[in-house]
Amino acid sequence: MRVPLSKQEISECKQASSLRWQLARAANVANQRKDKTRSDADIDYLGVKGELAVAKIFQIDHDIHKGGIDPNIDMWFGETSIDVKATFTQGGHLLFKKRDYFKADVAILVQAVPNSEAMDVIGWCTQKEFKQNAPDLNLGQGVCPALHCTELRKIEELWKFLTMKRVQGFNNKI
Image (cartoon, rainbow, N blue to C red; front, side, top):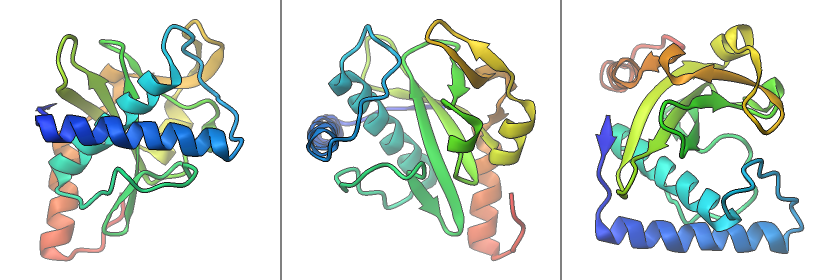
């Protein structure tokens, strides 16, 4: 699902990603970036845009300017925690450095749209599905568990489930 971002949203994403980078370095949080072809600023900017795209789809009041160290949960939809993972790679993977780093109930993969500020929200999976099904792959930056984008569930399925849960108040868990 393609999510366009307005000029104002792009400006705010740039500001928020710069702040995140500065706070992390000031707190002596080591850079764990695997992609050596891009800067920390590029990676943080991609991540903030990904979070904003997901928040827009699910109509989550998400503050991209909030500070602090990432606890591996980016946002909440009611009682469901969400970790947003973003990639520059077309046809990329949802990956975590280690299986135990998947702390949220679900993870959502978002992909940058080439030559655009829009983002494609690709798909999602539960923590349990990822831990059980993600093979250890070497994608050029070391071995880590990863699911190819074609192995993820459609984002519309999660949207429908979470919206029905919110509107109808049912207590089913993911």
